[in-house]
Image (cartoon, rainbow, N blue to C red; front, side):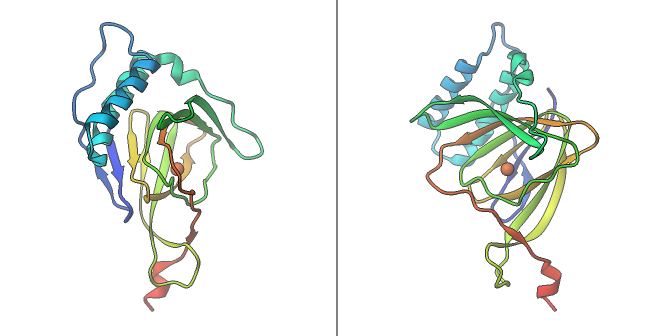
Length: 202
Ligand SMILES: [Fe+2]
């Protein structure tokens, strides 16, 4: 499962995020419960959040390669909304939620943050991620300016800091399927309003 790891910062910069550790085909299965156990261990032993994400990415690759059933553990997208989520693991007081998401072709999400740390691995299809940063030059509530974009393909993983802002757009004629991991949050997700930053400078 070749691909690139990315990290989106709160100012909309999407940087290559070098993995710490190496994924390797395990001699035995690397099951979901192994992965969940390793996640808890990383939280206990690594205090730097960016390093945690760099440690988690190779584990996500290992999990998706070893536990291939996860790639078809997907709920069919709702024809009305164009998307669906299938929760793989969500336990009270366990600090992570694991799920797959499916999007129909031609769909675009609202501009949002996740209010928590997140990891999204593309399993199938292509997903254009559009990156935003908060605008300081607007009276519009929760105004954001576009910073850039990147098309992610199967094998690519993007990680988010809690205040990173993005939206996604499916690319091509096939649905897009992703494996998503979010840390628990006590904060609310915010939806943002795009403004044209070039107008503000006039
Ligand atoms: Fe998102």
